Image (cartoon, rainbow, N blue to C red; front, side):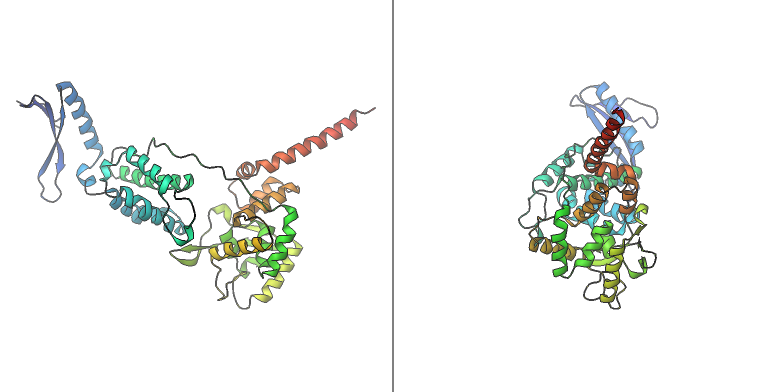
Length: 385
């Protein structure tokens, strides 16, 4: 006979097979309206009592019937449409969609949302690290696995979706909590040494892209910011350039997009040489509103700029660097030549000078050593009789 308990505490009985069973009301079926009962089993009455208490607590925190309606894949779609699309920048929508469609849904999409475990996620991350790369023409010859950074980004997407599920009372705990994540690879910063800049710019001039790369090296703009420059952003009289938008590829189209952060919206002073080069560039642009237009007059594709860069480097006999490394080159040369860290940080559009200091610690450390030597010489001279 079932042991009577207070309302809302369920009931406990010993079954004919010798095991103990705890039974409780889990709610009503949304389609039939009938009461749904669930149970827990154990070898002893004490074990079932503990399990029943936990089940009742989870049932109070989670809408189990509603949760059972979703698989992980279905919930990721719901989260993307109703949360991510509003929360994240439009330029990130394609990246998030790619993570969901190419990596999350094919691997764990069929698992019931309320059954997803931390172990399921650990197995997913291990697989992605070893063989997660999607086979495409542009990825031919690259490693089969995704980078630790990409895997961590996918983890963040899943974590956000699970947090949202928890807030909607679909799961009791976020299974991403406590996951062991791959360590980030330290990617050595590359720059074009000062002695290679002449060769690079000479070849850029021969290739017809001198103006673009000169302005990049003179300002340290992000690639999308450089391509998003319009003539309305340039004040040739005052010698300033305003960064107000970026160009990105979204859903296969080259479009304008908002900048990365509020600090990215900034004004940069230009030197006399840069102004002279921009005046010449103005004559070459025709009617295009963009400072560096494509052949059709619209913005240049971010991908084609990288291809241009690699062609110039190859023809100049220089090692391959990323477009972002030109930004590093600007910052490094500026710091090495006495520009203070706060000014460089503002020009780069960083959120704080501390971030800039951390990023270019190797440059500032060298400068500090030189300063120490200089001060040592000055003080030694003062000690001389």
